[in-house]
Image (tube, rainbow, N blue to C red):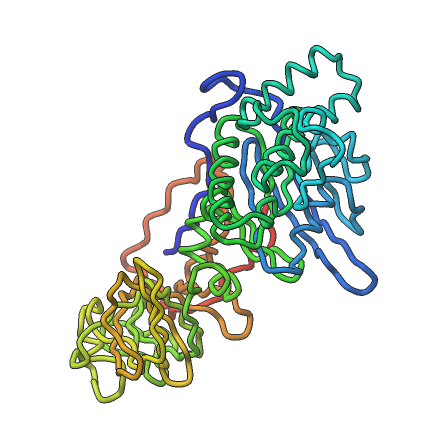
Length: 452
């Protein structure tokens, strides 16, 4: 049977300002229930259910216009929701003003006061709360030391680099010691080298503080390297929520498969065909062995294969076409040709190369260490292991899982339901009673557009 993957959890208490391994109680749990936001007839966010646990680093990921910034601004209290609730540690803050939410926002544009020094920019939230001058100076100095800004406290924003301005914006949020940090694409204005350095600094900061972070980005590299969990949005709806490795290795939909990865997953229209030993996904130039029994019902599918899982093999290896007969079905699947096509372009990425190939009417990518050994115009034979194939429903776009009729359907991308009591032991079957027969079935995995 298929088993649901466990929900991501921290293996140990995080480092924090109270000391290594000491438990802190000022972090926040954020819950979103049925949240929607409409602008006229357009639904920017529609029925989102999401939970951000204490100390989590949740990244809201998706293309431009998917609603991730709108969702973050509703959590911050900058935009009122049309429907639904927002809870902070169980307290309903849906209609509470931003100043009462104990949340700190870091904006994409930094939003620094140009006429104030770094010291006064960082300390502005404390002055607004009438914190005593000596205490405010101490907290500003502590934050400046943490962010390596001590030598810049008397400069103004125009005298700072982009990375330094970003650290000042972070410092202004840190000095409040909020329950959670909300960050709206804070690295998008930085160049590539500075973005990498600042990304590592934010990750290290989260590790030290153990605070709750909600981070918006369209950059999948930021999501994969920084997050403890990733929530992918598409057209205002949650497509999948899970640990970075989970959403990459087990995409719950065609959208997730096609969004994550560089290049993204190859997606080909195919059909399941029965072959000796195992079912195959077949199309023009495609004959890929799958991890499915040979008697699985035939049906149209979308076949997904990551570019790094395709391997170039000699063209005379059997497979990928009716001329091969049953040879591909009898092969172990590791070296049998799954796709045959023509190389149209080879891109040099330094340590790796990406070959673009035409396979029937589809265009696919192969990623491998340089040199990949292919040139434009050559015919190519490609192999893939059965465990590296993915199947999706052509109509709904949802991931397909196989189960016998007698077994309950389990979504491999959903979180398991906690066990509250031990199940009674199974009753032994009467050997004189024949067991009922059941046909295997491919069924779409249930949607993971909501996470609770």
